[in-house]
Image (cartoon, rainbow over all chains, first blue to last red; front, side, top):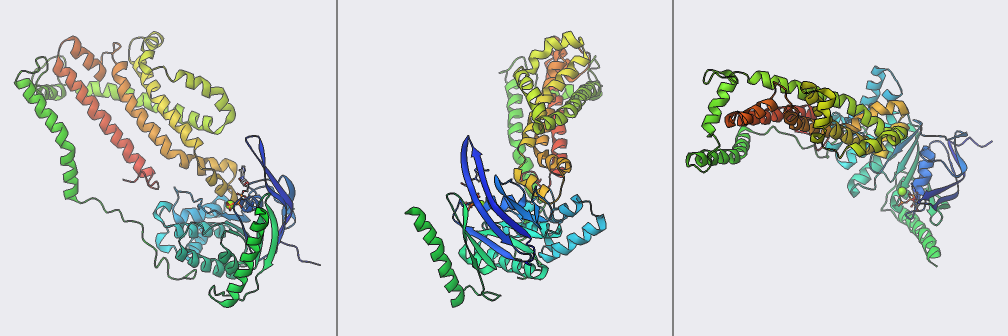
Length: 257
Length: 282
Ligand SMILES: Nc1ncnc2c1ncn2[C@@H]1O[C@H](COP(=O)(O)OP(=O)(O)OP(=O)(O)O)[C@@H](O)[C@H]1O
Ligand SMILES: [Mg+2]
């Protein structure tokens, strides 16, 4: 018997209404994610990546089909699925510590436990010196570390990341990718990660899911079998990147034709 | 860097906010004084050389101010009465302002958050808004009689709208993202009121309170021109009737200073509570 997947997206479609116009953002999306997997979603702008992620997060309801977590329909946002937004979404009036403690204290955990959890995750993301700083005093990379710590501190089983490193400079991005992998391997998290970068997807993912626009749908899936830690400069990595690139561009070519 | 390693080794620190050193402060004070001192000198010479006949000199006003505050120079009906008038005006300003804040902040939050309350109240309040406070004067005299209650009502009315409108604006412009973040972290919708809506709209609420308090001082003069015996507005009116221009100017100065000090206090509280906001620290 196959093991029960943590996430099972079945024939999910989403139609937005905008000024009386219908926009089909997603059609018939099927996606199965197993516990502990790191899956990257990639595809051209407007192909429904964010929409799919937001349906899994529970922020949007699918128009058709359904998304199941541990075989139960997702009905709304909940702490077991933590979202990391590209624009951070930190509470500007709370310090780093208070932002990280927001989830645990909202769920009514005892004060001492909240404090311990917060300290543990402040240290994990390397922000001890900035624990009492407010978000506007942090760099983009530090803000995103807080956002990640915030969902981890809340015991999220699955972390949903929508282009989390898209706004960061190349060096900070690489460092955060390393940190994410390190945390992921240590904690056995399940990660669903949206990106625009083929390199980022291949560097991070167990599996890359390629999406296509018009209407948004899942086009193909690719298992990445490169051993970790991966070297983006290695010939093997480049080989996979070339294949993936060709694959993505053939989608575009077909669409343009 | 791997997670759990030496914290924040290469990241820039937040800009440290060094308290401005004394010379810089002194310089700022001097810069701020240049224009008022020039005007004062101009006033002095304009009176001395007879360009302005009906205006007392700054020195006369200063002397009168001392008498108004502590007496001992003229010993007339206004000697040593400053504190009485100031207290009377302050009690109306702060009373009317406090009442306006107590009504307008919760009402603004309600209108901002609740469709039904908005549909019910917003059109009415928007319709009443263009009526200037001064236009309410006769009606308030009819409703509340000649006297302190009428002044109190006008102050309330003057402070009410800026507080209400800014509160509504603040509540309505809370980023949607923050509600999403709160709900995915397990914060219930009711708890989000105190954990998201209120803190997020606090900067706007404070803007409203500050404007409201300014308007309260603005309105008090009008309110006290309606036959109240005490109050700075009454002093100015009496000064005019008695052709005591020194008294008129003294009243104006006291209102200016009192309004300035109360604004500084609000700004101080605001900067303390809104430390987190990049546009409010100071
Ligand atoms: N709230 C909404 N209302 C109306 N249309 C929407 C809404 N959100 C998304 N859409 C539309 O749905 C389609 C898919 O959007 P989505 O944001 O999921 O794409 P994406 O793959 O994340 O794109 P990007 O890479 O640019 O972030 C787009 O055509 C977009 O205009
Ligand atoms: Mg997107």
